[in-house]
Image (spheres, rainbow, N blue to C red):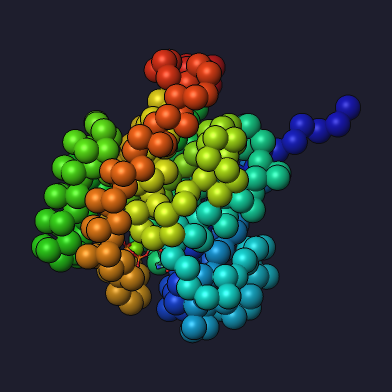
Length: 273
Ligand SMILES: Nc1nc2c(ncn2[C@@H]2O[C@H](COP(=O)(O)OP(=O)(O)O)[C@@H](O)[C@H]2O)c(=O)[nH]1
Ligand SMILES: [Mg+2]
C-alpha cells in the first residue's frame, strides 16, 4: 500500500530590496519548515521583483537551511505582479486539499500564526486573513497619517467595493485552501490578480467575496519595528489604485456569478477534526 501524499503548503513571498530582512526571514521559514513538515510538504517560493541589492544572493546563499525556490523578475513590476507570478507558478501542481500562504518578506507577517490559521481552516474556512484591525490585533510603530489613511481606505472599501464585515482588507498575510485558488484560477486565469501594485490584495478579496467564499480573520500584532528599512508602499499611488478598483467591480462580479452554484452563500462546512 502506498503512503498517502502529504498535503503541500505553498508559501508565496514577494520581495523587493529586502536584503536586511533576509536572515531573520530565513529563520522564520526554517521554523515553519520544521513545525509543518510532519503533516505537510512545505514549499517556499520567493518572488524577487527586480531587487537591486543583495536580496537574491542572500537567499541563494542560505538555501542550505531551507530549500527555497527563487523566481526573479528582470525588473521591478510590483507586489501584485509578484503574487501573479507565484499563483501561476503553483497552478500546475496545486491540488484541492493543498494550502497556499501569502506573506510579506520583511518579517512583519508573524509566521507563528500559520498554525492558528490552519486550525481555523479545519473549521471549514476557505480563506483566513491575519488581521491587525480585529479585536486582539494591533498596529505598532506606524505613523498616525498611515493609520488615518488606512481607516479611510477601509470605509471606502466596505461601502463602495461591498466588502462588509471584514476588518483587514489589504494585508498580504493570508492562508487559502487549494480548492479556492484553483476555482479562482479557472475563473480569472492562473495569475488570479491583474493589479500589479499593493491594491492586488484588495482585488483578490473582492473576487473571493463576490464568489461568496467562507472567510475568517485571526488577530495579529503588526509591529513595523520588526523590519529593517522603510515601507515601500507609495501611499498616494495606492489610494488612487484602490479608488479605481470600483470600475472593475461589475466585471469581476459578473465573472463570479457566471460560475454555477457560486452565488448562494453556503456558510462554513463543518468538518470532522
Ligand atoms: N515583488 C514586490 N514586492 C514588493 C514590492 N514592494 C514591496 N514589496 C514586498 O511586499 C511586502 C510589503 O511591502 P512593505 O514595503 O513592507 O509594505 P507595507 O507592509 O505595506 O509597509 C514586502 O515583503 C516587500 O518586500 C515590489 O515592488 N515588488
Ligand atoms: Mg511590511
